[in-house]
Length: 302
Image (cartoon, rainbow, N blue to C red; front, top):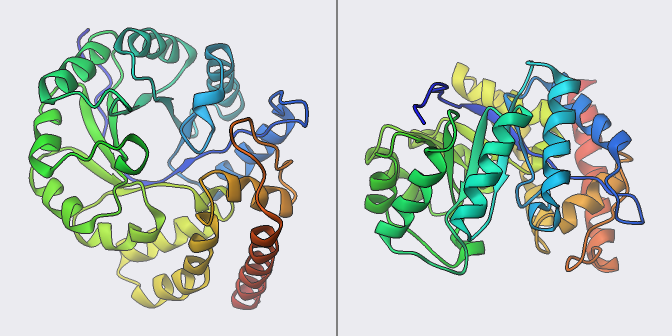
């Protein structure tokens, strides 16, 4: 299919969590509360059904429902990216078409986990998906989850495919990020909040963020301060928020995030198996850190 929706993405995108009831069903009332928080913060877009959204345990029907409901609730105020984490190219092609029909503006497509295809296989995977839709692909490079780390040259080759216009680079390797940016014209976004500011220095355009589930307004403010050259404002906010990142990754994402969302009253902390709730010890530490962040932000704004 001819690419009709060419776009460059930048700024703060939130890899949004999927709230559940205690019986495992999606909590759509909480979902709308999360959407409202993101809209009011003026983030650029949402990634729906990614790893933070527990995409691997959502059914296709649920994934499409989240996209449709987000589009209906938000209108065109925010862009929506649908997450595809399948190792099956045929299934990925089908889901891509369904996402586009549901209203997604773009697709987040992970390098196939477990299979670990070679370059020819990766090209086949991404080009096959791209041929089925008119919306662009954001390649998701996350070797910590796929056990498949690509070098800058390979990422550059994949970015030559017409459908791959963006890359979420989540290796946490700033040297790789810097080299990859030089190897293609694609828009590179950090997939790692802890290295986000460093990635901007090396030519990154933005972030697909976890922490912005909790403090989107502040994460947007950090980004805006960077682009305006207001290093003082950027550093003040980053000093307050960055210690929280350690606690959000004390266990596998999104386990701590769900705990934080519950502590802040946005939704229940329920997860789908095989994920289990945050440990009591880590929950206690997370609660203390959230309180500290809130107090420091209140002092700053007061």
